[in-house]
Amino acid sequence: MTTITAPPAVPVSKIAIGALGMLAIACGALESVVTPTLPLLQRELDMTPAEGALLSIVLLITGALITPVAGKFGDRYGGRRVLVRLMAVVSAGGLVSALAPNLPVLLLGQVLQGAMVGALPLSFIVVRKHLPEERAKVAIGVVSGLFVGGTMAGTLAAGPVAEGLSRHWMFALPTIAVIASGLLVSRLMPDDPPGRPDDAGIDWPGLLLLGGALVTLMLTLAVAPDIAAQPLALAALVLLLAAFVAGWAAVERRVSAPVIDLHMLARPAVWKSCVLTFVICVGTAVAVYLVPQMLAVPTDAYGFGASATRIGFFLLPGAVMASLAGPLGGLGTRYFGSRAVVTSGAVLMAVSLLGLAAVHTEVWHIVVGKALIALANGLCVTAMVTGTATSVEQSDTGIATSLVLVSRVVGFAVGAQLGGALLTAQTPSGSDVPAESAFVTGFVIAGAVTALSLLVTRTMSEGTKK
Image 1 (cartoon, one colour):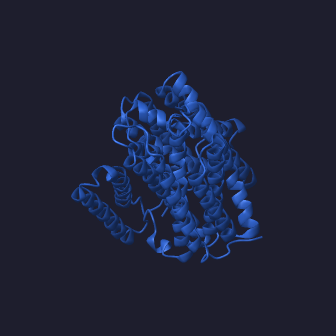
Image 2 (cartoon, one colour):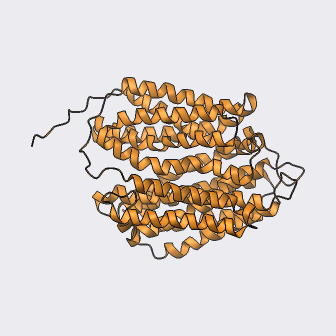
Image 3 (cartoon, helix red, strand yellow):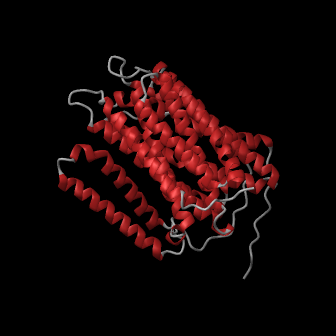
């Protein structure tokens, strides 16, 4: 049998790496425009809080499904080739979101935009294939940092653009940047050699069933407050969810290359990390959803009447803390072990959430609380990804860490929907303003759930220490 040797990678220029960085900034900005402007979108599109929560997480759900496929295709066919095609999908999604006249069309745009979650792993594939190891590490760090910088820029700019121009332009401007930088990457970045063919293929049935389970779960949480008086309809959704989960589990046990390896998930180090990640992200997502809503509540009620511009400004410290949390979590895990970092982060988050439930009468209370929650979440997730990666064989690193990242997405989705359901259930008839008790209840539930994670951290191993 003739062996086909892939051609060596062509050296890549600094300008090409710069184009990747520009693409990371544009994607980060496009991803972050919904959170600070969610109250504005809810008013303009006449959304319920639960529908707003669905809008805030649908991009993440798509990303959770796209990322493993994108990574596998990138290894098989070349990262640049797949990245360019993925950016075409993202650009189409951004244009659909920019032109959306109603919620269903905007949701479709966000589904397509979710393909951007696979952009960073593909960028890393491209960089590693074209640069020496030491330069590749620097380039990966730069691209990752620019993505975070893009999210900060989007958080700050979305409100002024939506209020000064329109909500359509807050999607259109970063989409134009994605298109321009994507064309630059396509033109300047040489093709990277494809990897070894994978005879196992893609687990499409598993992906479809997992997607069906996630969508049904989100739909159940979104409509639960409205159909609570119709137990048969609610029971039908729960049964449909159970059917998707059972079918997905049956498929994953049989295929040779499952989306999520259930055998890997059965390992104590892995399932504990997944449970902790899910619980921590539920608590984080409740705060991520509730904080902008509380800031937007009119001043004649109990809120602050903040515009989309001011909300973005108030959220910026949290974005900064989230960007610092990754390096801090990595250093903490190196010197103190993953269990110490996760425990510290969980305690900080629980205290911050319960503190917000008790004290939220001044803007600085909310800004500080949200920033501490963002820091705690970053510390915990970084420590758990690092701890999981070092607890398995090197060949299993990708599978194990992907389980943690999927748990992160599901936790965020459930937390956001929980926050939306609470506000929907406790909004008086004929009013657009939820009762203050809805926010208090949400923060208390999130704090209590986060505190329960400490029961699991006690059973963790110490993890890696220097």
